[in-house]
Length: 142
Image (cartoon, rainbow, N blue to C red; front, side, top):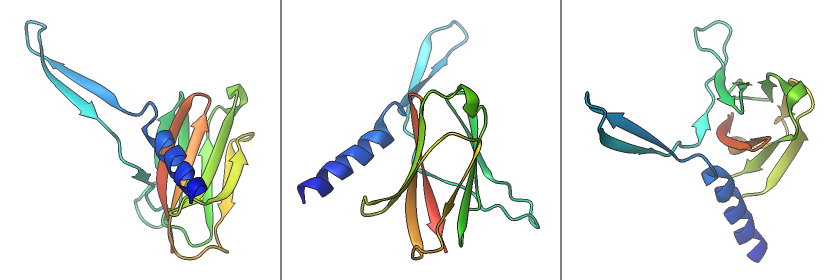
């Protein structure tokens, strides 16, 4: 039970670490008139269906572009990361909703895939750590 609690604390600290940002608005005279706290939620990548107009989910992290497709997925989840040759350290970890680590990949190449065919239908969490930046996505297995 103690290990499970520590795992939850670890996962949520990854989510919260460095992702809270502030947005300021100014009036015409340059006075700050509004401050917004932006706390991003776990994102879900859009489905990549070549016959439809939907596109893969794309986001920038540590000056790199990450593309995740398809989501929802039936078997294989594809991840493409640009500019990995200048990456000092990087990993991608897949967790189930109970906090159990299912797969981990060290980022060495531009393209990585996860074979989810042996896992049951449901929701999974995908965590990225590229150099000092972290990010997370919700992945749906059909």
